[in-house]
Image 1 (tube, rainbow, N blue to C red):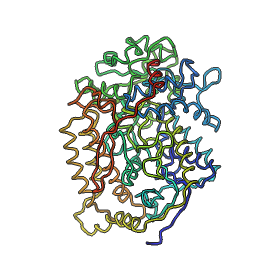
Image 2: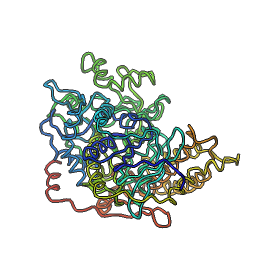
Image 3: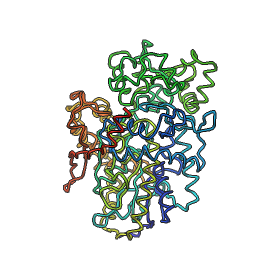
Length: 606
């Protein structure tokens, strides 16, 4: 084996977002050696883009809120295919994780009497989201970094992992390279925690940043772990569609939580006519009551703009398809209208939504205090991920853990806004705790030199083909993948289109294996793109195959050819695994029966 730089830790955390940092802090507190590997610079993880808040049932704004209501909301939002044990742990432990973050220095917005302020959000019965204006993710990441820096955690920035290393069935480290110089490295560890975020770059229009290429999903899958719920991909209803400079950029749900409304080109507030039966009792059917709700009236019902994301996204698509959309293929989101309701509305909006105001003023020349935004659904979050144990976050591969967006289960068919940030804290902590325990109980495993050399050979193949001037570059393949997934495996799905997508993926796999990269290994973004393509193709295939298998519409999965729910499919998860011959296997796994006491909670709180 070549003389590659080798780094050793008890626990290796892959990803430095909210879940990764919280896991690293917890593992370090347990007294083990911890290393963090991240693709970009520390502080630039995608968590900083989270705007609206952290969902936790503190009950500071409405004392009727508690973990039971939060649990019931999460299960109902996920259409009951969630991992109920994860949903239970999340609802119970989120308040403690928020208070912990506050003790570590997070500066949250406050109520007049000094308690942590909470705002309304889609799918949540009561005001539940702890926030810092619309910069909550940034404050969360800052706090975790400031706290973690004192714990002696080693951080390896601008590193990309190519494969997980195994000793028999157990994961014992990873092999990757530094993005600046292109030099290979071996990371040995007793336990590995994947916290790499989402897969949004598989789609043309996405709120995700450049590094969300499904790395953790693909690393786990190729190491023998199972993926779960990959068909459930959330399209956030309000991403910017115009101007092009901000296309896909997220408009936080906090805009609607503060009173923003959705209107079509006729100026009609269309959501009032689209309230599902199971939410009718909780949803206002007139503008006056909806406004009172956003202003904190405990007796008012929430406006229909704050229904679950999957429902709002489909309503927007319906308006567009029926010819009532905005000039650039979206609808209008208007917060400026509140000047009819409150004095000094512009100052109020700037104070409540500072990032939204400054971001769109500078990048799009849009003043949200004076004019509406043109919005439409944008690929935002995948509910699917690594199949993990509910309590420990360990996958079905010994030594391999996952937390955050790259772990599946908690959200079921649809995630409620704000649950992502509390998920990072709750299950990041648990992953760190149990990975440290696993590391104390096991020794470093042996590194398989043949596996390392094979990974290095595959990584350098694009350079070996550079002499062939007819070779195709990586950007064309990625572009075609994004276009195809957007068109054929998007918000509204059909069997014939998804079969075409699978045929297209087969062709894209063949093209990806013949990609040419010119230049050298230093500072070469073309090479980085080429190495990310197999991950994007892997998760895209999993999404398409699972969506085909689930012949029903549930949550974020909407099948135009199967528009109704299937009770039988509501009792199973779709599981993805790699067959011995390298093909992708799909199977159904029955969801364990929920305990009677949790069924009672749902019955009482719904």
